[in-house]
Image (tube, rainbow, N blue to C red; front, side, top):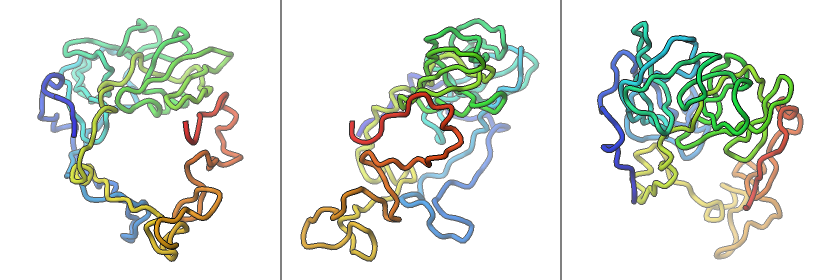
Length: 266
């Protein structure tokens, strides 16, 4: 089992009360209490932090006051105070420090932490908190250590290389933050024991081949038998993993994808 020594990174353990609230955890149940997503439920109680992904306060500098842990995401968040006194939580980049000042502006300098339209960035820039459309809010590259690379500019679009390897077109007037998300050591954590997964809200997963025929398409057979079918499918009979294509053929975003991500066994 391994973890991260937060004492060397975080500056406080008490969140800003005005930016926190209770919320209903995603327990994998619908409004009737039926399981709709397997292997979810339980876990430690969490407090919700209202993290700002809209960045709708332009040309007003803000200063980082704290670096904090957020149980609802893998990257670190920071309490920032704008020049007019407003407080917000934002997702921090990997080299953020207390006392540094950043700005959301079309003409902001190209330094980590600042936010500006993709069309104003140089090719090869690493960005995070990327919008899919103008003023649509940050949607891409929000996990710990993630980033997106600006590959090329063409007309009203910018080509971005996603963390998955996919190359996608995004409008040049969509905004993004420069840098990469903090806490890139998150991917090195070893959960180590079953109980720690339960604290995180992850319930046990049973292999399909260990079930009965009535419970899974792979079930039954004498001893340890194979799945007995050519293609890998889920408990619901849908294609899954191992190179199976599960993307809809007429998905709306097909025209924006230059190169698809690699799927299946590497």
